Every structure is written in structure tokens, then in C-alpha cells.
Image (cartoon, helix red, strand yellow):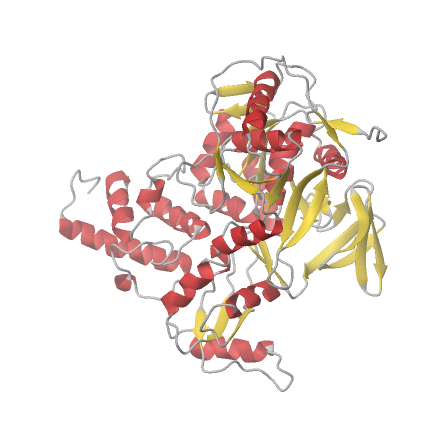
Length: 450
Length: 96
């Protein structure tokens, strides 16, 4: 039986074996060496078809991703690694194993440890692997509105189209740029903009993940120009307020939450380069960009279009394979432009981590001893800052520490409520709903009593 | 007074209260600085801080005491293990 040969696209855009694909603390990594590392890892991976790649070092993550692709396995990208999430992954794909570079990794899955191989060129001389455009690269999970995460399949062809549009929009085509990311490669934004962007546009990856302002300055100084800082409003605001002396960049990219125009202007001055924001979501990938210092309007990625139908905004075209409803509040202003007026009520985003109130409420109410409970976003949400969620809970038999510990097993620490308010009953109305005003009132009267 | 090589325990107690005050202020915590136990974990079951908080605390600590924290520093987890460890790190590295 024969199948028609389906189309393939290369794993890397780099055309020369000695082109640089990554910068590590001990210097550059060439395509040749990278492909050697990929081959070695691919031949040693366990048989399981799904991989939870938690390597903290971005180069190792990238080698892991490439070996996973070459072995026709699928990467799993959940939004967090809590014990509950890991259990759910195992239900989703029982043959999942964990690829880790941490000796102390406590993820409860079969573990395969990343082993650094001695510096040596790939014995094969490194033919660039070709990947089937229909191959599923990753399942990215959103929290959904119930307790079960929703998988979204990402295939190679659309990912490559998305990244090509991104490179074009960011002006990175045919430039030997290096990407420095403050976001983890396991997050969709980091996956696209700190890993795939380098592989598919002939750029290089900085292996580290700078955290403090001084780390960002060190990372910028460690790589040649042109260099691109890929970050979030939270990290960028901290960088600015620290007043650290920062070497100039050639581009700053921000995503995960909207940045204010004022912060964008200040950052462009500090880093002496343009700042471009990316707007996207798990379902559609990268959707639009804007030069925030100059305009509030977003410009759609190449090939994408919006259609308004029944007050819903659909994105389609380009790398968006099936028309998809955008869950944010969007006002189209021109054919390829729109304004973003906030998130729909159920979605929450804390420092770039997304979830939904429905999911969080489900997890809170699943804890033994919780009679009733509800999360909500307080009214005084800050721009460029980090606002925490409040939760009200009825749990007569539980103390605060026990409840928080149980919740920590289930949700990412960023979604642990601050404050967590204990009440005798929730202020539900006749239809069982929780009016926002009643929750705010409860927060005012009971919130300070910790 | 600048970097004392070995601060007295009374100095450290005073500094610990000052650092606790910075933590409470940086994170808008709803508690008195003196009520943070010196040896409880700042993460997890203790005060429950996460990486976002650590960055906020690092920012005020850097400004107040004039030194930069770096994540590549392997002591990072140790530094933020407890209020006492953070205070000792500040005492050893402060330039103002």
C-alpha cells in the first residue's frame, strides 16, 4: 500500500552547517553540532509517543523538541505542571514521558534525563530533517471551562506559516539575530517566539532564561547584535523600574498581556530600539501585532482576516486553518486592523498565565471539605502590573493552610487567591448566581480579617 | 556605617524587621512585618510567594541595599528560603 508523498518542510531555515543556531554560556552552537545532538537524543528516547519536555535550559529544550519531531512523537504543552495537571496528561496520553534536565525533577511520570554529549560534530554531517506538514507537533492545552484541560493540536505546516508571518512582521528575515527570552519555552509564546522563530528564520537562541533585571543586562551583553529581547509587560516593567544599565537591543517583543503606551515609549528609549507587541491565543496562534509606542491599533498577521457575525468576531485565513471565534472584546477598525477592549469575563491572565474562572472554580470546589467557593477578579485591576484573584470559600472544617495546600496541588501558584476569604455562605441570588457587587462587598467586609 | 563583616545578632534582628517591612510593602501583604516568622519558608506552605513576588521583592531589595540579584547565582533558592536567609544575604552583599 502506498500513500501519496505529502509535503514536507525543513526543521531549520539555516543553510550552512556552520551557521549559529544557539548561544550557550561557553559560546556558539553550530547547525552541525545541533543536528548531532538531536540525532543522539532521538535515538535514545523511550518508546512513548508523547513528551512533556520540561528542560529549563532553552537549548536543551530545543534539542528535545527537534528530537521529538524527528521521532514523530508529540510534545505536550500544558499551562502548568501541578500534580493534578500531570495526572490529567497521563489520562490524555498514557504513554507520556517527561524529558528533563533537572536531577531533582519531581514530575510523576517516567523520566528521561537529558545528557550533555561531548562537543563533536554530527557523524552524519547533518542533513536537515524534513518534517511532514501534517505532523502534529504539539498539543497545547487551555483550561477550558470545566475541570478538564482542552487539547489543541498544532501541526507543522500552519506553525511554519505563522512563524514566517511573524519573522516578516518583526523585520527579522535574513538577519542573523539572536533571541533572548524571559519566558519559558514551554509556554506557547516562548515556544513560538524564542524557539521556533530562531529555527525557522535562521536565527539563534540564547540558552538562558534571564529573570532579574541584571540577568537581562548580562544576557544582552553575552550575544552579538542584532539581538531581540522577547519578554512580557511584567518583566519589562521591572527592568525599567530597576534602573539597571542595559546594553541596547535591536528589537523588543512583548506578549501575554497588553502593554500601556507610556511603558512602551519608556522602554523604547531605554533599550534604544522599537518594541512590538504580539496578540494571540492558543486557538489561532499569533493573530496581530502593534508598535505600541505609536498606536493602540493592532494589525492582523499576514493572510488573516476578521469577520463579525452575531456579535462574535471570527479570525480566519493565513495560518488559522478553521475559522475561530476570538474570546476577547474586539472592535474592527479597518480591514486588517482592530482595537482590543479587554478579555471576556470568564478568562483570567495573571502575569501571562491564562486560565478561566470556570476552571479555577471547578478545582476549588473539588477539594474535599469545600462546601461552596468562587473566584473573582477584583475591580481595581492594574495596567502593566500584576493583579491577583480573590476567592471566597465556605469550608467550615478546613483551615487556611490546609485549603491552600490542597489548591496548590491543583492550580498554578499564580492562581492561588489573595486574599482567600472564608465566609459562612456565598451571597448567591435567587438564580444561584453571584452578583459581582455582592462579592466586592464581601471582600470589603471580610477581606481584611486575615 | 558600611558593610560590617560580621554584623551582631542585634543588628541582624533589626535588619530582618526592615527586610520584612520591604517584603510586606512590595507585595501588599495584609500582615505586620514582625509577624513573619524568621525561619518559615517564603514559598509554598509558608508565605506562599511565587516567582512574580520574588522579582518584586528583588526589585525593592536591590534599590534599598544597592546590589543586584542574579538568577544564575546558584544560591538563589537558598536566598529566598526564609526571611532569615534573605536577611543574611542582604547583610553580606549590601553596599548601602
